[in-house]
Each structure stands twice: as C-alpha cells, then as structure tokens.
Image 1: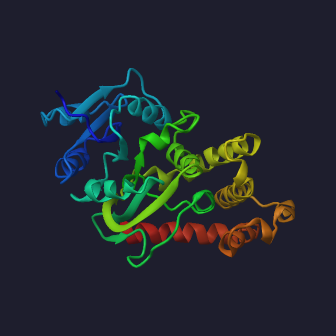
Image 2 (image 1 turned 90 degrees about the vertical axis):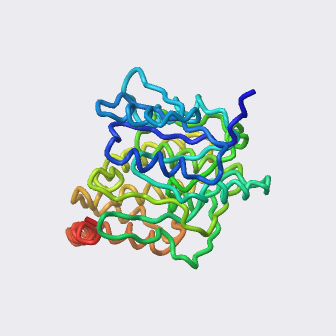
Length: 306
C-alpha cells in the first residue's frame, strides 16, 4: 500500500532549467519526507522536463500541459493533481531550508490556522537579506493582505481542508496576482500564522516579473478590485479594496507620468489604513517629482542587487 503524501508541493515551470536543480534538491533535502512534488510543465521549450525526470524519485510527479497557459490556470491545473492534506509552493528559481516543511506543519496543530508563512531570504549573486526584520512578530489578517500584502509565496503552507471551504480555488483569470487573490480570500475564512524563522529563499534575478512588469500586476489588481467591489465574496472588506484600488491607480499614475487634479477629490484620510498609504497616493498626484523618485529608486535597487 502506497502511503498517502501529507504535503503536496506545487512547482509550476516554464523554461526553468537555469535554477531548477537547486530548487528540486532543496525539496529532496527536507527533513520531513512525506511529500509529493507536483511538477507542472507549462509547455517548456528547454530541458526542464529532462531535469525533473532525472531524479528517479517516485514522489516527483511530472505533468505536461497540452498548451501554454497563464499562471492562474497552471496553478489550478497543478492543484487538481494534489493528493496531500497540506499545500506548499516552490517556484523553479527559489529555495527552501531543510527544516521548512517540518517546522511549518507543526503549526497546524492549532485547527483554527489555515495559512502558515515564514520569513524569507531575498538573495542574488551580490547580496542577501531577510524580507522581515528578525525580531518582527506581526499579526496578519485579511485587511493587511489587501492593503499591504507582505507574503512571499515560497514561504507559505496551506491547510487543504480549509481551502475546500472556498467557493473557488485558483482563479485562472489572473496571471500575475493569482496567489494574492487566493491568499486574501482564504484569509477571510481562516487564521494566518507567522513563523518567525527564515526557512525559504527568493532569488532575485533579471527575469523577476514582479519587478520588471509592474504595469501588468497593476492592471490585474485594478480588475480584481472592480470585481470584488461588485461581488459578495469579500463583503466585509470593501473599504480595504477601495484603498488598494487607489494605491494601484497611484502607482500607474507614477509609472505613466499621468496627472489629473480631479484625483485629489478622491483622497480622504479616513479611507486609508495607514498614513503611509495615504501619503503615497497623495504624493502621486504631484506632477513629475514622484516619477523621478520612482526611477531613482529603481536605479538604486539595481545597484543593490544586480
């Protein structure tokens, strides 16, 4: 009798051969052994499948998409193959510490918890640093996830039984924010717990889309806000969704050098969860200067990491 895996790991891959070995081997080194890796190849044209197949480990289950899809559809398709009780995520360019799964799964002894995440090391060939301060210990709820999303996907583990209580899981509508969408909706029905350990690592390189394609993320965030302001899935969080919408419009205004005095009319201090968000939206309405600051920040980021 084949033992049922306790943790299903989703690894969505599209031409990931450069870093793939490191990612898979960080799974194989886990001290917790009862896992399955759902390797979903999204029509790669490189040697990704050959690399994933080379390990000969029956826990590595390889699936090939019939056509290339967006990430939301790929995550959904991979999840449909999962047989575990808990769900973890590792993209092809990221890494785990060997105690990651073992440390996280213990937190689910508290049956009210549906999401557990850890600190994450951001690293490149040049430097590395923790995503959160090592002494930081914070409470995460739906309000925070909407207005100041702090999670790194490779650090997250989910109770699949909690996930089944959602009306729908991964939304194939989204390519760039499918993970954000799922975590926000799941957090509305279960508790989120932070484990104050650096147990995952997020690799910074020139193809990180979250840095180089901000306009596409913002387009999907705008669509997400419009959808949830008109639907009842997140009825208790309309205020936070409106705040995110204003933040998204503000960043687009900076990215595209757009300015409109009418934007000031939408600003109300009471509409924001913190003064930092209000200040960002307010300053985005100033002509030219925010765009210059944004470009300078991008330049300094490249100097720091690349």
